[in-house]
Length: 205
Ligand SMILES: [Zn+2]
Ligand SMILES: [Zn+2]
Ligand SMILES: [Zn+2]
Ligand SMILES: [Zn+2]
Ligand SMILES: [Zn+2]
Ligand SMILES: [Zn+2]
Image (cartoon, rainbow, N blue to C red; front, side, top):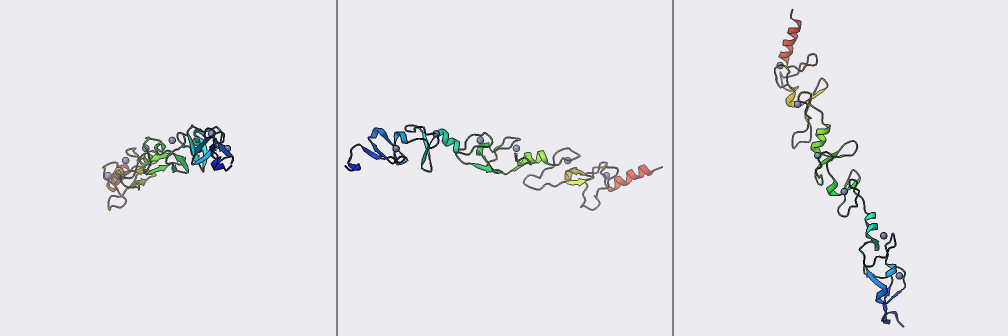
């Protein structure tokens, strides 16, 4: 008798290659026929008929083993089902990819990492690591919209461009502008004329 003419013939089992006889002993999954006892998880061999399963490379996996094959987010350690955001070589859920300081999601947003690969938004990175102005004690960060920081370094100290002033008369100093150069005296930032005044006072009889 031909296989196909047997009224009980359900198909050939994709797993073991034997005939599946009777609808009750077989099942169809991924367009293939299996014995019920042959349709099992590729990893743990649990029978999967009637259970949720996932197909990978044509092989069925139970839910748990499927999730275990997925890459885990390096922040929440849960499997990543959708898009993997990869940064500094590590996988993230897009929602878990956030600034370690303010918690802002940085998916599609410029970010930077510190020496230990901690993710920072640009603002917080500058706030945390930028040099501090010795006059106002605030961090010196790029002007909004710019990427480069402009600062003045004098006497081994950093200054905001607008904080680099004569200590005596508040004249804004600049190494580039004529007549506004810095004439430091004993670690004090002074303009030329205030420097001259102080020198006079010191040397006055
Ligand atoms: Zn089989
Ligand atoms: Zn399994
Ligand atoms: Zn996550
Ligand atoms: Zn931040
Ligand atoms: Zn300042
Ligand atoms: Zn001055």
